Image (cartoon, rainbow, N blue to C red):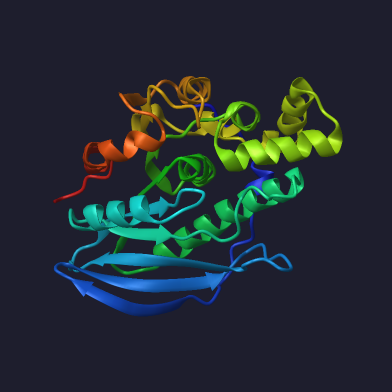
Length: 291
């Protein structure tokens, strides 16, 4: 595992902060609590509260916890289903919701960079809160996310040594390549706006994104993770996250276990039950979960 010492974009000063907690549901074997707390990096005109749901296992002994980060847009199908599945198998879960859209429609790369950093630090502050909960074993913390949530969860895991296990679903690295080659409509629109505003060629756009987002790219910090602690799940026909982004990240991580699903990015929905089963197996093995 290669140590990358400069984590300056994601450094933050740890301090006490108020967390609002409200019990909103009770299911067989677990509680559901709505939580919110102030963002570490508030910005004018933005949503500056971090919101999520905490699924708490009703056990006397301490149990692991898994942080679940959402996809970039749309509903919370993946996050909700994953949280309910994992908590049903003895893992506390913190399911965080989106704040501002990461990719700004005005084509401002500085805004994208700041929102990435804000999301990662706010997730890490969620871990700060989790580690002082009496039912949490602070030595058994995992994280997962799908699509853009996989990119973000990669950064959280890479920059926070308290995370001991990770599952990245439909993720990868190399943000410049993602922004240059992805067919996802928000990314394509962003690229079009930037290229028109700055009068850039395709190659110039790639170089600009590389320069602006290099220090928040999961590739930069991949050497901080041990491949034994990572599971990647991707699709063979993904044109949202290019295959080369996945393979470059996989190689930089030290070639962890990588499962290829015979689907596209969007049709991977049909493999969700399989993916969640593999996610469970990975966390049970790496976090010593008792079902």
